[in-house]
Image (cartoon, rainbow, N blue to C red; front, top):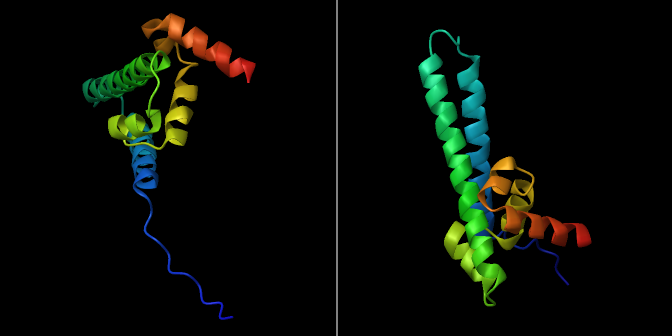
Length: 125
């Protein structure tokens, strides 16, 4: 029986989307870190603007994920397919992001009842 290696397949779209999302998150952090290294007196307005943009994008992402999760708690259906259509993520990546944002004050401020319920569910596991 010959043991030839199988050709490597192209990464799945889910893996690519998760890597893209992780790369964007890493790029945003790297951008913020690089921007903060510049002298604060010379670029304070651009630093403030970029920090505000990052914070705004983070809050928008938190709202989108929580709103999506809130819609799906009362409905059944193909949630994995909807996650892929809405965010372009695998379900694993979606639940990683959701789990991480449950600890943020922005999430609690946006939808306190949903966040507390999800925390109770997580603690019960």
